[in-house]
Image (cartoon, rainbow, N blue to C red; front, side, top):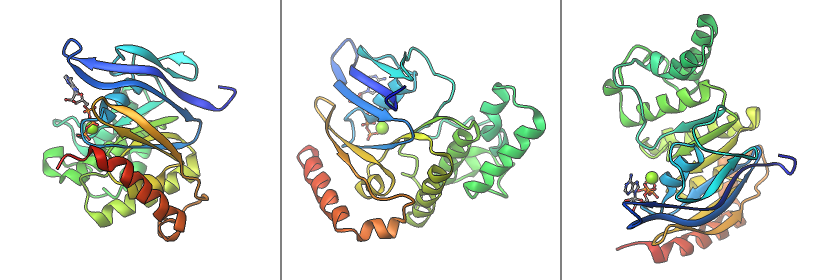
Length: 256
Ligand SMILES: Nc1ncnc2c1ncn2[C@@H]1O[C@H](COP(=O)(O)OP(=O)(O)OP(=O)(O)O)[C@@H](O)[C@H]1O
Ligand SMILES: [Mg+2]
């Protein structure tokens, strides 16, 4: 859109089980073109449900989601989702999982093979092309999900805790890869994470959600210069200030 807004969540609420479960209530959120919006919040505050509504997999109970000014009723082309629980096809190999969306889109065979190889390499899975998901660790399966999303060259990437199940070192490598990818391709991203550190390293803004009812409590502008070096970001005094601030925001919702 002209003002650079890509995604609008307009007073959206989502209720389940005949209104007895409120996933989130009255969420207002804009995502600008090319920005990385990170969402943090306690378990059960509606992050995944909100992402599914943005992706067109679920309809809000009230309010609406718009992408490029169009109301989202179903999954839109150019929007890819990396699911919290991988969402891989268990009967397909890594190559076939990564190439699945491209095949459905009718991408010619040679081009499909090249793109699939490129993204498998990018996420560090070269050598595992012919394995099935059950033969991979959780972190590797998540990387297959990431490669599959990237391979479709989406304009918008919706990511639900994509690095939650990888070890700390791999997580940092993938964060750096994602920062590089963002430099190169400037996609619009919505990135859910439980890690305040990850949100600050990756995000242009961070939406902090709270629970009961699920809602957006605050949206912070992060504003560290890009291209970003995660270590340099962590060394900034503002990083520590924001980290403490978000931690305080989340604290009341932590159930001990
Ligand atoms: N299909 C469903 N039917 C009924 N209730 C649901 C459904 N999906 C989600 N919920 C409920 O909606 C609320 C929000 O769930 P959601 O998965 O969006 O939370 P989340 O913030 O992603 O949590 P987590 O951090 O644990 O992934 C929870 O109370 C959950 O039980
Ligand atoms: Mg979730």
